[in-house]
Length: 95
Image (cartoon, rainbow, N blue to C red; front, side, top):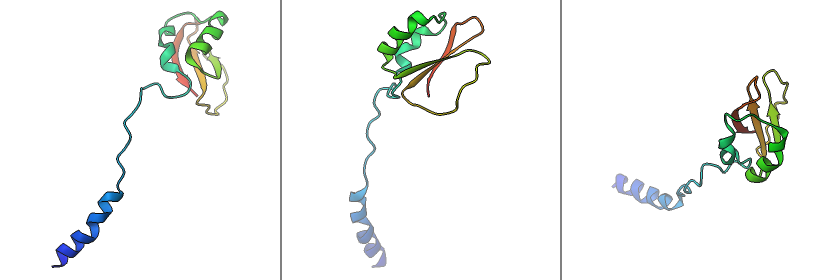
């Protein structure tokens, strides 16, 4: 009898459980890093800034060369463009 009572007490709680929402596209970060993946391996020039910002929708772009000092603040709407010593883009990430 007690098992049925417990089951009947717990059963209504199952209705309170929410199902997780389906995941959207991979590039929902706010900086559009996935939209600029074709820049990897290309030499960065400032002429690429405006078209990259327009294409990605990032509010700001930050180009980071080896040895550059950068702040540690996280801004999801900022696209960080990391380059190697020759100025080629090696990594794109939000922040």
